[in-house]
Image 1 (cartoon, rainbow, N blue to C red):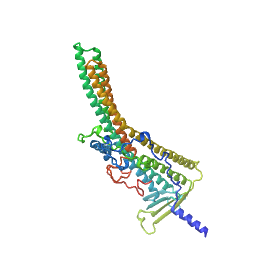
Image 2: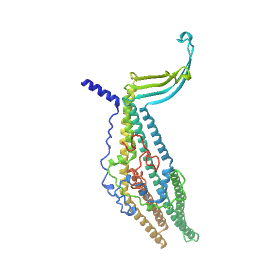
Image 3: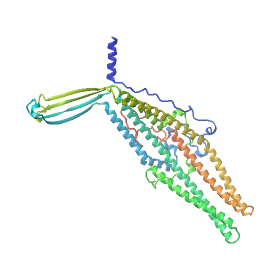
Length: 507
């Protein structure tokens, strides 16, 4: 009885097929269970400070906040929309998803029989002394169906299919990461342009003041009431401001060129009016959650895990190479020595050729392929864990920056006010003969530099918020409350691209 039971079990396993893939277990995340706290990490904004104008994330995580709700500038929103439609790198990512889907479907087709039709005419000559019919030339016509099927008893084809599917899903997640990165890059470049606009305004204002100062010093020198030293010092400040203006004009033009490249087309003239740098009002109080949340929010981590899943499936295919390969080949049709007799009675012909191939000696190729697959899996484990570590570090750095920029900018604003008052007092002292003109020029230069540093700090704060939004998994949905699209959606407005038997979010 037991013998019959074992035979029945074996037959059932062979009929159902088996898989030699190792059971997949997600590797442990090699990071702390919580983000850093204390010190610079404790002074996080709460959405009520002046720089946020009261705009709050309301406790929603980044992945649930639409990019239109994160960016309040209507001009930036329009530019982001253009970039999603026209950026060439994102377009390549979309095409890569389509190519990966096609490769998956090609591999999956190996699970099914191949059926084809053929019609042949075979004409041959046989020496008379070897012919059994006494004829030297014979002609044969045939029409029929051909079928071949590799029975996947040991899961080789299914493992290859799983590997192709994992690669497809990894590519889809990479496309998702590309969109989020593009939104962040466009916003950062747009903010950089605004910062250059502010710097240009400061430089032009400084240039006007230095030109007027130089005019007065030259008039005094020409009338003999001023010294050449004051004249040359004033001229030096004027030339510095003029050079700085040209530098900033060049950088502003190059920043716009970089933005055009990201957008993928020239910026239209009918874009809505934008907001100045100080009024961007980005959401500053997005909660971070736990590091483990990044495993589901970050598409680059999901892509790395899918690559690891594919490597795990590849081990199953390498193991299956050690076992017999069984294939069935057959034909069914008609065979006749004349074209007119193809479909006459008695012309039916068929053949059935089952084949089993067992590897005996391959010079160690199968063993080497298995070892290679196992090493590649260990490599992908290390890469997956490194992506997690990099994500943890990016968020931690973003939190450290977010916890310090508000206080830094407040101090820089007060410092700029002191330098402005210092310039007023230095000019007053000079006009009353209490101090020399050098103190005025020094105060003017220090005020100019303080204004530029303040603008740079404001830009860095906003850029940090944009980056942190991306690092926490934001930038995939357009409006808060939208249903997230599948990662393999190849169009901004697409609902889904179906994959046979598997969701793009499946793990």
